[in-house]
Length: 340
Image (tube, rainbow, N blue to C red):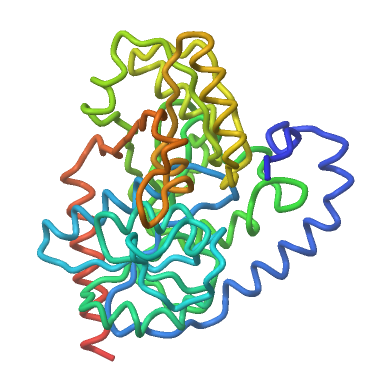
């Protein structure tokens, strides 16, 4: 689905009319967040959002996994597998599964690290531990109380922030902001802009770390697009951020097309995009997440091989601060269990 435009307008009659439903939804969500979860027995680091829609959560999970491996940890990701048909628990295998089975984000991450998909996150713990995990990275699930979280790192887009600051359906928040702030251990602000300024100031006043990060293009992806004019398309939470990243990287984006998040592209849709690009002498380019939905266990189908990938990684302005934060959280998590 696409986010309603009024979610990002401070004053909207539609939002006002939906406030009673938002109050009810928010009360239920806040009460649910207070419930106790199952202890995994090993540290659990949750990477979440305050709101629905994209903010850079998947690149953050991948960056944390890389850091954890540098710290000699064995991270395993637990994901709900949004968009996939398998309820799990199941370990994602790119040679057996496609995005229709396990979701696009888990499939993309499984190319580089172990990923367990489970609609019931608590049910996925045993399978994750069976993969010899020393740390569990929970992809999303910040508002879900089923698993005890040792650290909650919240990702927020520096430009978009939290929209109008209201709870679903009047706005994009998954729960009232205050109980979410109270459970935040660190805030990761991705990109420029002042959209997250007030939240960052509030958390800083509570003594919580604020980390700045930026999406940087993979050099191989960038080299392949240098000097080319492109037609960019994306079906992610914030397609505009992808298009802006391309332009900021010096890519000549002549046309762009946005689709709903997790959009299941058909063969005919891709054929039309390929034809449009060829007709205008453009290179067709999209995100790794979108390509994951096109790729099957046998690889990329012939009808989608004309699409160029644009890979990005999340780079932190203060990598040492992130390393200290993660190391401290792991130390505290293990000490808590030793003292239990």
